[in-house]
Every structure is written in C-alpha cells, then in structure tokens.
Image (cartoon, rainbow, N blue to C red; front, top):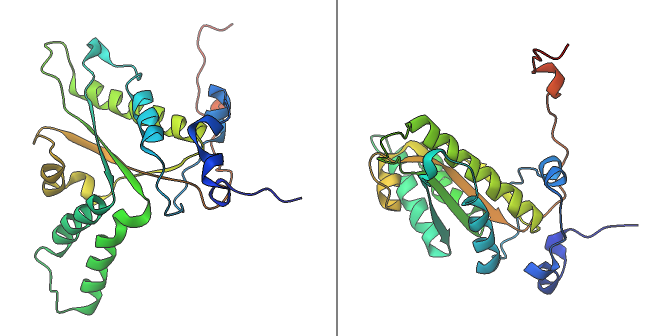
Length: 211
C-alpha cells in the first residue's frame, strides 16, 4: 500500500478546508523542516492563516514587535539580486568559482514559491527589553511553523548572511534597528520528512523541590 504525498494530490485536496485538525502536541512532534517543496504556490488564504497564527505569540507588555514581509513571484528574484550583489561585493568576479558562488546565492530565494521574512522592530515601550522582543519574534515564528504544518504546508526556517545584511534589511523596508530573524520558505512538501533526532528532555532538565 502506498500513500501519496500532499504535492501529488489534486489542488482541490490541498485547499484550506481539506486540512485535518491536528492537536498541538501532534503538531510539535510531527513538524519537520522540509527544504524540498513543489513549485506550486499555496493560496494567499493559507498564508494569511499562517501569519494570523504568528500574532497569537506571547510577548511582554503586548508590544507586538514582529513584522512580516511575504515574497512570491518576481519579488523572490528581486531578493536574489540583492543577495547576489552583497555576495559579489569586493570579490574578484573574473574568478569562475566566485561567479558560481554568486549565482547560487541569486537562486536561493527560488527554492520555494513563498518566503515569509520575519523580523522584529524593537518597541520604544519604557519597559520593553530588546532581547525579550527578539524572543517574542522567535515565538511568533514557531507559531507559523506549527500552523503551516497543521495546514499541510512544508516550511524551512533559514538565516545565513542575508539575515544580517543591512542591504537586505533596507530593501525589505525594515528600520536600521530591526532584527531579521529569518526567511521562512513555504510550499507543498515533495516528500515525506524524515524523523529528526532530538535530545530527550530528561537529559537537559534539572528538577528541584520535587521530593
């Protein structure tokens, strides 16, 4: 008996109404980072549900510091141009190996039909602490990853040099004080993910006062 992957099923079966309910614990245990996705772009309605889930993340003082930029189509190509330009800066482009590296950088945003860029704009709230704002942004990303999984979508949270590149930040419309927390690549999975290894909680937990 064989089971088809989501990417092999008709588009109608991948509609929002076709998503099966998933418990929180099942979503946490079942979610995987999946880098290989089909070129078919998920409908905007699904992406909006993923973004809406992000806004339910906890944050101190209700500052809601997270900001998102959703890229698809030619906007991904434009991001690739910015990334390639930064990769090429100050390097010898007469070197074939360097040119190949720059071209690989240019193509990276095309690995998925949708990219959600997640950033944090630290609040000027008098009690806001910047590291807590960043932690809230990371919690929002985890909400997105779990929501996407529950909706039958594959995601990969990527960072790398572009996440710390001022030129990328400026092109995306973030302020100089913002933090880019990563690029969430989104699409329909092309293959079933493999189970990831993990460190059991008992190996990294200390219990006190539990006599």
